[in-house]
Length: 119
Image (tube, rainbow, N blue to C red; front, side, top):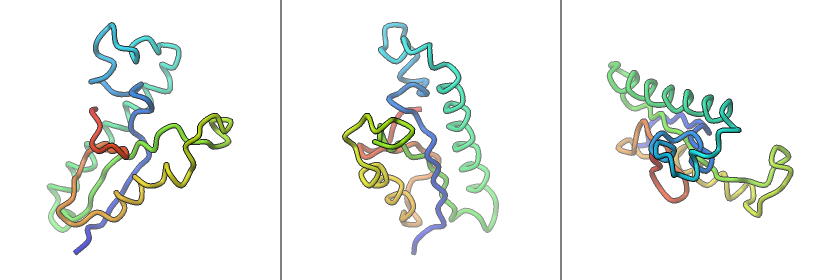
């Protein structure tokens, strides 16, 4: 049986919103201070993902709902001025995977094509 799923394209872009990847001063992601508003908003959405997942999991009748975030990668779109070789179809793969999770699938995580990503 498939679970009800909610996937949001929210988690880190190249690690800029990941506490795990920006926490070290010598991390290449720590040097990206010029995108503070972007990374801050993504970090907030990461927390919303976790909190909604927890809330649904502990509410009777809603346990089957899965809340996860997807990181589609740097995709060639109007927003990125088509500055990537990654197509929208390639970026959509993780979203489709999360949208078709089985009932025992992951909940409250951030995922890319490579699998679970650090918060």
